[in-house]
Length: 209
Image (cartoon, rainbow, N blue to C red):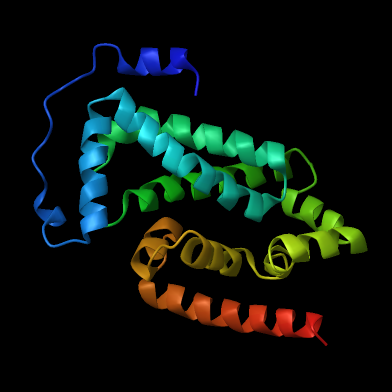
């Protein structure tokens, strides 16, 4: 990230750290430890913001690329989400969920907005671009080797099924966090997960026949 961006964001914004919220008591130690890092980032401590950036930029990029199949678009979306994180981090309130659930909700909303804008402009949807790339036998073989056929199979899921698989099994969120990111209940997430895994299993089994 450019030093100038950090300079603008950091200047004159340091404040005393906030007490640990009651919601943090008894939570997963890793989640509580991350909240301590977030508290420092909310005071615009540069090293804390850098740690969050280095942790989440690759994850958001991976999430965006698996959804869109376009390197440049994924890089742009990840950078946009990181900037939004810096601009909005003071508004973040700990509610017992991983901080990543908040960031990924921003990413999902950005992804939805991007698809809407492209449709209004009459542009080819990025998921359609991915489908055309995967139509090549060579590309199919390469991607099957690179990601154990997962990325090819993900293309054949619905958007929500694909997001559940990526968020839960690639990014490692629990059902509650995935529900928060997607704006769905835990029950709905479990149902989506079941259908997605069943579809993935069928798709991958067909490739071995």
